[in-house]
Amino acid sequence: MTQDELKKAAACAALDYIADASIVGVGTGSTVNHFIDALASRRDRILGAVSSSEASTRRLRAHGIEVFDLNGIETLPVYVDGADEIDGHFAMIKGGGGALTREKIVAAVSGRFICICDASKRVDVLGRFPLPVEVIPMACSHVARELRQLGGEPRLRKDFVTDNGNLILDVHGLAITDPADMETRINQIVGVVTNGLFARRGADVLLLAGANGVERLAPRQEAVSAALHATKS
Ligand code: 5RP
Image (cartoon, rainbow, N blue to C red; front, side):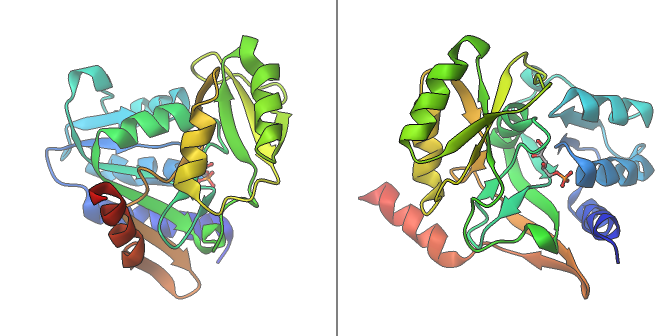
C-alpha cells in the first residue's frame, strides 16, 4: 500500500468513534482530508463539525457538512486529527500544515483525541520532524533567539501565513526528551502563540495504519501513572 492509502485506511477507521447526532472536532492535513471525505457518508447522521483550519472548513462545507463556531459549544465528544510524529506515550509533533494553534484549541475542548496516522509517523523520540512554532510577526527575531538558547535551529517557514495572520518558525535539531516540559518552556517565550508539541494534551487513541491493517492503540500506561503521580506530589 502507498502512504496515501495507509492514511486513508486510518482515516476510515476513525468513523467507528463518531456517534450519531454529535458534533465532531476535525483536524487538518492530508490524512484528515480522507477523514472528511469519509465523514461525508455520515453527513445525515451527525449534527456537524468544528474545524481547526480554513482548509478543513472549506472541505467540510463542500461536502454539505455544517461547520459550527467553537464559541457556541462547551465540549466535543471526539476530535480526529493526524500528526507529524507520535511517540509511545502519544505525545505528538503537529503543525506541518501550520494549523497547530487552532488544532490545539479544538483538542482542548474535546473528550477524546483520536489520532490517525500511517506507520511512518510512529517514533520513539520526538524531534526529527522540525517543531513548528506559531509566532506573532513582530516577535519573530526575539523568539528565534530564545529558541536557539534552547538548543534548536529555527527557520522561518517561507511564504506562509497562518489562518491567524502569524508566522511559523520550524525548529530543527531539538532534543525533545521531555515533551511536556519543552512544550511549556517554548510557550512561555513572549511572542509565541503556541508550539506544535501536543504532550500536555496528547492523543487518547492511535489508529496506526501499516502493512497488516489498522492497529487501535492506547498510550503506554507508565506515562499516565507518571502524570498522575506528578499531579499528586
Ligand atoms: C497540520 C497537522 C497535521 O495533522 C500533520 O501535519 C499531519 O499531516 P498529514 O496528515 O498531511 O501527514 O498538524 O497542522
